[in-house]
Structures are given as structure tokens and as C-alpha cells.
Amino acid sequence: MWYARTILVVAGSLLGFSLVACGSETPAEMQPPPPAVETGLLVVNGSAQAPPPGATSRIIGTAAPPIGAPSTMLVGLYSFHVSSNADCSGPFVTVFSSGGSPAVKDFVTNPELFRAEDAPTGMYPCVAMRISDVLEFQSATSSGACVAGVTYRGDIYRAGGEDVPFLDLTLTVIPATGSDAAPSDDQIYVFFSTNASAAVALGFAPNQVVTLSTALVVPDAVTFYWDVSNAVVDNTTACVLEPEAPALFR
Image 1: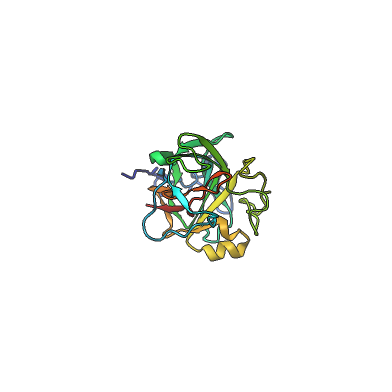
Image 2: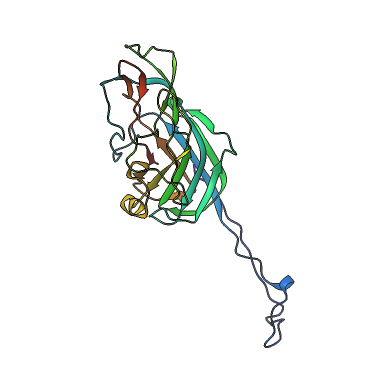
């Protein structure tokens, strides 16, 4: 269900006469209040399953055939932002912030990532999610370097791993650090846009921009899909996770 709260502001007059003399300004205490901002409930869920038709293909090419799905996949969410501009230019409105440490959720359990009770209503053709680029997972199957039940950590935005560096909301480069052997959290942004090519033209890296099928509408309930149904890879020296490109769908 979707919910919305609307505040109605009514401005009145005294017997139809203005209280302002010709050529004078209205005293500050008599100015009408600014228009109320309509707010609504925004719920964002997470899923490790394949999204509805329209998702993009795998971002990272597999070095070896996948062996199956993970039994857990922990993702840290730092913040969630929306923009009225399809090219993902500012200003952005921050709808959710974890307050420093990431809010860690297991996508395999289809969790609720957050709910914003007072998100500003409207249509937003660009959504930005700031997440940890370090994924923690366990393999559901034992094979070679992968042992079921053992926790592994992978770095999806690692040093030397991208031809085009990722940018933050201010178009500032996010340095890529770490490796799968020694993961380092770079707090990357993933952008979802109804005009992905315009966002890339603005400067965002192609690998951090995902096509948004329709604009996010507040109030709304959406799911952040990150398909790992066949993403655990045994490359003989390490157990790694290579998820499909993320997607945001109703």
C-alpha cells in the first residue's frame, strides 16, 4: 500500500479588504506561510533474485564458470537520493541516510532496506544509491576454492578494475582502492536514470549508471534487485561473487 500525507494551508482576508497601504510592503508577521511540502511514504526493498524483464547484463565478465548462488549476500547501504533531472545532475534530495556506518542487509532474505515516512512527493527520473563496494557472502555450494558456509568478501570497485572512474553526486572522482584479496570500502554511488545516456554524457561512468524503466514516484514501493542467482565463481585461487547489474523496479 502507498500512503501520502498532504498539509493544506488556507490563507484568509479581513472582510475582503487588503491590510496593506498602497506602495507599502506586507509586514513579515503578516506574510502567508510558504507552500506546504507534500510528503509520502517511500519503501525500498532488496532482492538477490532476477528482476522483471528489462534488467541489464552482467557488469563484470566471469573469469570462470559460476558454480551457483550464495546462501547469504550482505550489502551495506549508506544513503538514498533522488533528483528531478534525468541526467542525474543536482540538486539531489537525500531520502535516507544511515548516519555514518552502513545499514547492512542480507539480500538473499529479500529485506526491507529502509522506509522514508516523509519523502517529498513527486516524480524522480534519477535515483542515486550510495553503497559499500565490499560484498560479503557465503557460497551455497562447495567447489574448489569455495567452501559452503565460509564467509568471503569481494571488492567490486577495486584498484585498476575500471577504465572509467566512478563519480559521486558532485561529479568528483571516487578513488578505487582494495582488491578481492584485500577489500577496501570506497562507498560508491550507483545511479538509476530514465536517460542513462544523458547521465553518462554528464560524466558518470557507464558501469555505475543503470537504466530506470520508469521514474520513481513518491509515494511508492520499489525493489532494488541485484541478481546473484548464479554468481558465485570458483576461479581456483579464490571464491568470488560476480553479480548481475543491479536494477530498480516496482
